[in-house]
Amino acid sequence: MTVNRGIVAQIAVLAALAVIPLVVHNDYYLHLLILALMWVVIGSAWNLLAGYTGQVSFGDAAFFGTGAYTAGLLVIHWGWSAWWGLFFGGIMAVVIAFPFGWICFRLRGAYFALATLALNEVLRHVATIWESFTQGMVGIMIMQSYISKLPYYYIALALAALSIIIIRLVMRSRLGYYFLSIREDQDAAESLGVNTHFYKMLSLVIAAWLTGVAGALYMNYMGFIDPHVVFSLHDISIMAILVGIVGGVGTTYGPAVGAFIMVLVQEMFRTAGFGYIKAAAKFTDVQFLISASEQLTKGHALGFGILVVLVIRYMPNGVVGDWGKLMIALRLQKTGRAK
Amino acid sequence: MSFFRADNLVKHFGGLAAVNGVSFEVNEGEIFGLIGPNGSGKTTLFNLISGFYKPTSGEVYFMDRRIDGLKPHKINRLGLVRTFQVVRPLKRMTVEDNVIAAAFAQSGSLREARRIALETIEFCGLGRCKDMLAKSLTIGDRKRLEITRAMATGPKLILLDETFAGLNPSEQDEAIGLIRKIKASGVTIIIVEHIMKVIMTISDRVHAINFGQTLTEGTPSQVVSNPGVVEAYLGEAYHA
Image: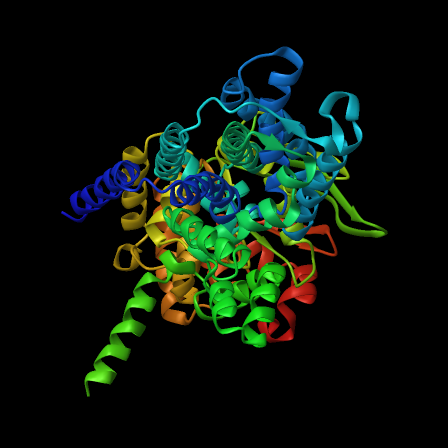
């Protein structure tokens, strides 16, 4: 019964998301939705590796950027369509991930996380310095295939759905149980016959592939990338972690919820309260509001930091993981007010 | 031709020889006790056998295959499984999921793994808490889970590392019953134990070590009457 209800809910959400662009014609909102759907993919991938397998990555941008650059380089060097990037971008991300994991999964816990951070930095420098191949800081600009946002929206939606389906299938199989047991205790898993190195590699490869595909989508959609955008530590790697943590580490739908929240929060900071504070400042001419809107735009990294502290303090399992707790808190407040 | 054989095992940690030339054989179907005072090298010996350490020298044979130096998961697949002295439950998973993860060693399908897991849980008497999170179990049940998980991988030889430590007398009696049941199901057991009452009751043969070296080997009664063992391990109280 509950299973049926779950399936119904999922189909309803998917259907709603499929219908939205037919109702909402505002390009700005569609743009935000496309970004959110892209983050669903990246967040789910991060969650598979970090949330379920326990191997925290600080360097998801390495795979994201590899995917994006693969798509871009196919265009400028070989004149292929950037859409091939969706196929080859994922593969190239795996090509990067494989030797990296082979060597660095000897490291455990924080040391592995630091290695992913290093991979992120190394690749960004490669993309910056190797100008003859990557055009360095000039970046890569391509012609987008569509002016309308609709095709991108549906591709992003399909990828987001695909990544959640993959996570669900994986977590209901031997793979999922092995990932969890590695997260909980590597030595115990090893003694129960789990080839921990192999399964960590597998988890990394799936995550890298999904992240690479998301990167290729980004290239196609935005039409412009440079090393500081797609190999960005705080805009990609840290954002991926935030999506996972805010939504709920180790939950199927956590990253999906986290993606929508984080894209909203990011946009809120970028535009200083969706432009409302700025408008209010202009209208009232209060000095405080003017400086507040400026500081808010500059301070988004600080804002993210505060958000993480709050989430970890009050909802360590994220919005989805602590949903029950959240609801109880809200209900208590309501009944309290009624009295 | 022997079921299990450790041949002149040596393990050095820097200058310290934790295990220094220990050899023994285990026959199929028996309960083989391993005793020795604290720090005598019992757990190191287990780590050598189960693949967590590589011996400095010496060899381990299991069903005529040399297994020293193999990775633990490979050794597990051959049918040799160990439990940990300090229990290592997969804390944020339910008891059932803990055992299912182990049962995947026997079958790739979730349905089949769950069937094996539930069977093993019943066999080991953990049925009443199968839906609990492993971290919320009492120490007695955690030890039981450790054994259940090991059994779910379908072993031929199981290494039990101080399974009785921290159990109260009635839990000890239950655990003795469980170990006898495991033996009756055809699984061979090597057991490390401090509690003499236990080791004397259930072991077919006992091997005593101290300072990483063999003191003696024989039936429980032979071993307890060995003066070296009495001096090193049992102390004056047991002597009297």
